[in-house]
Length: 385
Ligand SMILES: Cc1cc2nc3c(=O)[nH]c(=O)nc-3n(C[C@H](O)[C@H](O)[C@H](O)COP(=O)(O)OP(=O)(O)OC[C@H]3O[C@@H](n4cnc5c(N)ncnc54)[C@H](O)[C@@H]3O)c2cc1C
Image (cartoon, rainbow, N blue to C red; front, side):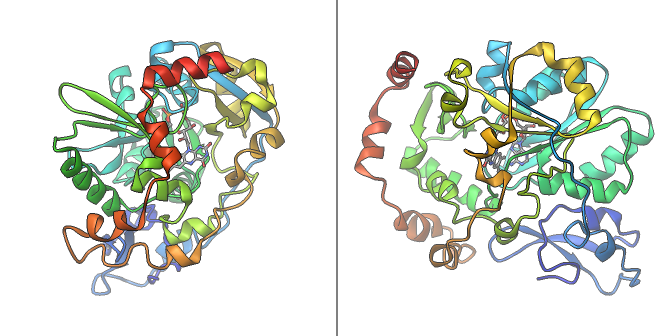
């Protein structure tokens, strides 16, 4: 708990609003960033509390259109987590003179928001980083750009979009927001410790890490790349990925997330279209399918202009949310495991292997699945559907 809100998401809106620069972001016991006030600089204006998106109601809209989409460009689709919903819009946005804010890793494995001005820069922010991203100073940068008349697309979790909206206070015609369907975020410290552990296990330096490798088609496989090779693994053999999907490592506020509702904070909401093989079997594709909710008139306008980048099919919110429960409610907190999962994370350099990884044993089935070569998995998938 801090002086601003009981449920800080770490969005950084308050830090960037404070005229006295009295707020900084510090790491909590689990390695998440939280806002902290330096009382010696604080003038008690109360702005941080008044504008904290966790303390106020944030405007949300119900989708006016629901779509299943797949990007036409195969190379860009391959690099996308699901059906390339983000890239299809973002690329066209840049081609039309805009800039795009999204998440990449820095050299120390911090996931953070950066601004992309070109297709090459966009490629770096493609695909999902299953760890909480640092919005850095993007809200202030975005405001400056919007005031100069620049077109800005911001993509992030719904709480980050909520933070941006609260920071800006008013709507700008030249701003488009895209929120992700989100089950929760892991601690950045946990992710960094995981990478150190993985490098020790594999005995090599990881150059690239991808939570959504498509070497075996659209699924939850991760890949690690060195200078010379790329190896893919099934999510369920990995302690970090397994615990993430199990939902026991999320930031505390994620279990009470106010954005896990049919009303959406972004102009456009994107996610994986899980269950597409049941809802629209003719549209299933092993290369990936995204779901897209168009929530505002602005979103609709953008979709009309850029839809030619996609193959798409009309669907319904009900069909999407049947397989994506975080559109309806937050992830349930599994108290027994969550209460202790981060204990001691700051106490030792070998905490990941000594504590975290020890509590996890991959099942026999998962281990067998992991042994199947990616090309064979892809072949089976293509021919079974
Ligand atoms: C933490 C997290 C949890 C998610 N949970 C779900 C879920 O429960 N159900 C579901 O359907 N989809 C979920 N997603 C979204 C999913 O992983 C894909 O991003 C989505 O299917 C869109 O894929 P894409 O092919 O359009 O684009 P992608 O190539 O994946 O790009 C999507 C955008 O996500 C942004 N992004 C990546 N990592 C982060 C991050 N850590 N924080 C903020 N923004 C980020 C990128 O900058 C990019 O703009 C989640 C994503 C994240 C990051």
